[in-house]
Length: 369
Image 1: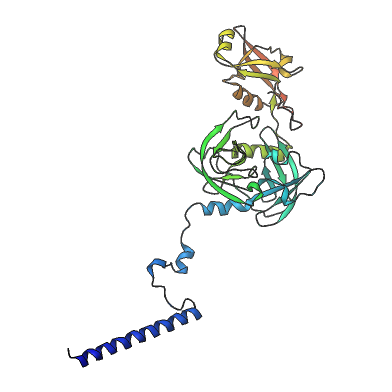
Image 2 (image 1 turned 180 degrees about the vertical axis):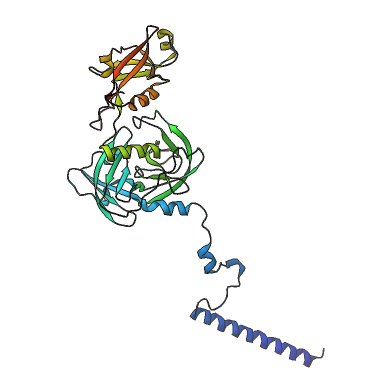
């Protein structure tokens, strides 16, 4: 190629580059003036069209949280006549009827003189304490409002170890918070948290302020009422406890319809058999009577300290915890029979069931069964 032709080609190339640069600069200026006028052609920052993003399915459990969250409330209490404020938040609660019934923990409102409930939508209502049950650490409130969002109870016995669950509440008065975990165990007992225990254990983060809030399944249905944590520091350490929904539903219904939970009572102090007791008393099954309340149904019927209760109304008794549950299920005023072993002799003792006394002050121990 001669020098004239080479110079001409170079001039043409330079002019094309300059023209391209001018066009690109002009397009960039237009895009600044009217953002979005140019298509995004950079694959590193490519985004889906708005129509696709709007209809893309959410991963995780956003639907369950969105269904349940409006029914979880924050609870504020006052003492000595002070007005409840959002600085004195103590716990959470769950709306379980569209007409305003709310379930929470007994210890949240135990010493309250007035209670205020803050809904997730920002509304606030003064709440009436309908009743409480210290033996299960549950209480029922009511606010005067209609058409409220209400959670649905999950089917009984639907929860299994390993299932995902979400805890919703107001930890540390930060505002409504959702945490995720699994069911670590079921039927946790002998924790010293309540008289009647059958707790759900979960590693979903539960902290102070979550008490009374909701534990839900992945469908957004209520499986438990968050109640307590096991902690050496006061914060979450992966071990939290919730009252099963079936127990909560029974207690709530009794409080609303009867003003409280009515349980059977016979007035005995009991203990599980130790190997030494079993050898001395001549039985490897049953529960030993370690004390009697004066004037109680059991004392009047002739039960003695040292008797071993083998069965109630022909239902075998395996341990002290089971005996408490069996006695509480008896109907006050009705007859019942105890099969006992006394000095290696089997006896049948008939008695009339009493009504379990209510616990009074917070520091008073629970009455025996």
